[in-house]
Image (cartoon, rainbow, N blue to C red):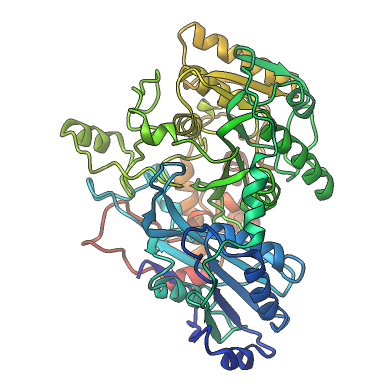
Length: 602
């Protein structure tokens, strides 16, 4: 078993096939447990079901669910987008889980990346946070050095001995949507094994009889991809533009851009310099629709527009984009993040659409370019992802390189696990939301050829245009904030001076993508690890997490160290919540977790 759910009573699993219509109707009457719906498989030659098929099915199920019920919908990406649209009026969205496909689906014409994932949407009839068990995924180990895939460094004492909290990208197990999904079903039965529920009802509609003909609705979708003029122009040479994204986009000529990328403000009230990220939801999406339409206009036929966002917002962007462009890929970027509702929000979606039919992707059909960016990690290759579970410890990487081990490379698909968000301030400039340059190296290498034009209409401190510059692409970057615009300009000058703009450096940072205040640099009279282990000792003595007054009374060290060295009391107690872990493999398997301690300390 690759997971463990604390205090879980696995739900009774009951399967009903689509053809058993009377049994389904009877089971759904006032159903107040967990229902798992497997959507019909797409017809041959199509990438999705008819929207009407999905709508009809969901209406019939959701209207019968009780007030405490949870609905899990499993299907292809496109179908899940339309499933949420139908469910959003009657149920609360909770989660989009990306599920790894055992055998990626490929496209003979190389017009899209191989599809390596499908998904599961989670909605509830109740309002509020998702109710579920605390579930942990077992640590994975590097096939070469046999140590944990992630290097936990000096923080091993703050982690659980069994594994980390489950995320919304499940890569430790895999399945094919057309095949046996029992491993996924059983995980959901454990995840929702709480007192509220007793049964997981599985409605399998995958093989319901359906017409393979293209519907009128889908025909219209195909026709609408040619709404724009086909006269091509070349944008002016590489430049950075200071101004409003929408206004400046309208000045660009039709059909002049080879790859358009956007990482917009997420409307999550983040602190960006010079503009607001707290528009009303209606205003926000109206604004998004406007700049998306402009991106579609300036895009060359056959080229790609890619938008990065959280899955819920990606759904809304998807619905607008499919009216004017053609779906290509939903890239599931498995990025590091912090726990929320006991589920790590690791899934960021990069939705890719093309203007009409896509050309063969340069990254799939062209000879791989030599990638030799100054100071870039030697392990990283844009078109050759790191093999799953291989670690990045320098000694292990060097060993693999010395013996020219090619087994540590994985397939290039739409599931990305080897690129992580920036963690160290030495790699940051003064902007709260910076993308790792490796993300842009990969996107630009897949979707463009040298000297083609890359556009980012929310260029920020310049990650996209800088990566394009380094990869010998032309670029257009638009940014509203004068501060960020000037940072980007200075970093492009660094490239011309022979410097790597993404190098490690000491910088004074004033902006932060977190409400927690940044700690000032200081010398520690007592190591933080020692202090955290002392809190663990006191916690065991008291039988609970100690508060500040209890550490004053029972701790061996002055309370001033805790006040000065830690950003929050939660960080102080990090080691007391867990029994600690080892990066070494234990006789080929993970140790059983210390459930009693987990239960005691949360």
